[in-house]
Image (cartoon, rainbow, N blue to C red; front, side, top):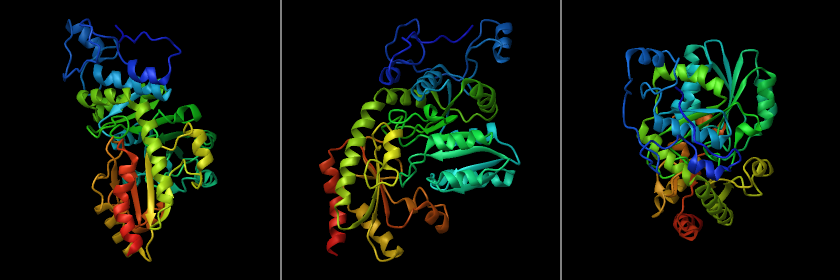
Amino acid sequence: MTIPKVALPPDVRLETLAVREGLPHTPWGENSEALFLTSSFVHPDAETAARRFAGEDEAFVYSRFGNPTVTMMERRLAALEGTGACIATSSGMSAILITILSLLRSGDHVVCSNGVFGSTIRLFQDFARFGIETSFVSQTDAAAWRAAMRPQTRLLFAETPSNPLTEVCDIAALAEIAHAGGALLLVDNCFCSPALQQPARLGADLVMHSGTKYLDGQGRVVAGAVCGPADLIETKFVPTMRSAGMSLSPFNAWVVLKGLETLSIRMQAQSARALELAHWLESRPAVERVHHPALPSHPQHSLAMRQQGGQGGAVVSFVVRAPDADAARRHAFSVIDATRICSITANLGDTKTTITHPASTSHGRLTEAQRQAAGVVQGLVRVAVGLEHVDDLKADLARGLDALATA
């Protein structure tokens, strides 16, 4: 027995894969993907059960490590990322955790950008007590990544664009550095999604996601995933999942599946709104600096446009003007508190625009020195643009920004 595949033409495009890839219909002929809410699966006899548990027959055995709805989501995301396989996890952070547990051991070394999500930094730091050391380097300086390599380096971890400064690293250059040193390159593709960027096509070995963000797209569920070569996923990640069980629930997988169907059109629309808002923010007297990859002022603008299909994504960050750090924090809070449309939450990727103060939320557990190294200053505000009318978003931010300008 093998788990069947959907019969699709070999040359269908990303938008079609996002709607059609998965598993074939059940005998009932449902048009929407079936939701399999079951913990276990029934076998015709004890001998068949034994073969299936031993992996001699390909079949669903137990939903901790295999479920039809989860498999549909995994196959669809792998197809969008252009990889051979995918393993779904309970959250984006658990996707990083399963990577560490599957690939690294005591004595190994990791090179990671110092501009990644705050919890990612903390997780790698926590593993130092198990003998896995991490060197944090500049997101955009390929020479710094190369200089940090050691004989024990097994993994390079990059997030591009970074959270929250939208710094962009050269994926192909990092892949070359990793492979020359016998290491793997993992790229967190959360901000772009495969609708804008496919890191595996640029040389990345693994691609991870917090499916909580743009893959779901409406802030409904928590999910994660790692995409990569089929042999690596099957031999390294699946055994860890069977033992550790950081599994994605079938319901959450089904929600992400439905989110993937609209991923491309959402990312196009939200990216366009974000760019217009970024241009507007650059004109505001109370704003010191704006971060968005599609702005010509962005330091990695040209690279971002090459890697991201000419689009900058939906996240805009900006720094309010202030004489010192204490004033900057007060000013940032006042801009956030003046909004009436934006949702004050650290999540992103929603159709509803969200706004947050990274230094006290997503990066709040880091030391001030770590935040400074990552560029997360007290005056920084992050806006993840949704699908509201952009003029309404401008008016929402103008309430606080105009008050600062006239204060």
